[in-house]
Image 1 (spheres, helix red, strand yellow):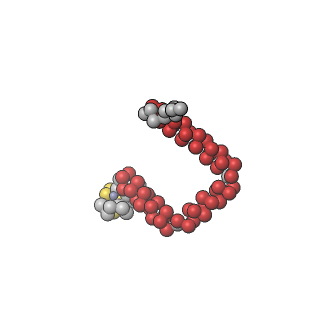
Image 2 (image 1 turned 90 degrees about the vertical axis):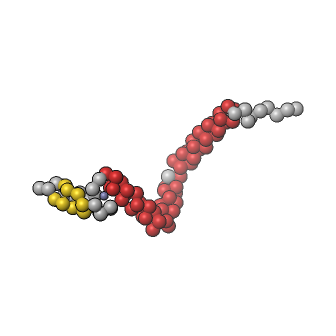
Image 3 (image 1 turned 120 degrees about the vertical axis):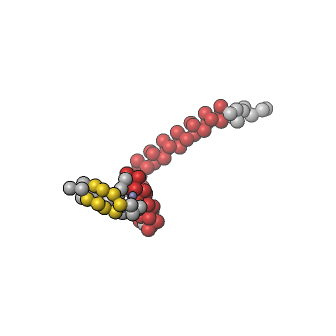
Length: 93
Ligand SMILES: [Zn+2]
């Protein structure tokens, strides 16, 4: 059955045969999701920090490994770039 609904994000009237549909388009759904996440992050800053702290605590080894790998990757990339741009030169004696 076709229903006429109002988009929960932009307010546009649209037709759908899906009773659970709330938004007129994928764009509106994505935009709403983004807004919602942004708001959530703004309202849960402490929670997020707490969550991160807990995560690091319970995954200490994994986190260390991750950081080490990340740093190595970073150094490798930048070293290559510096070499390419000839920033790295041998010190003159
Ligand atoms: Zn919409």
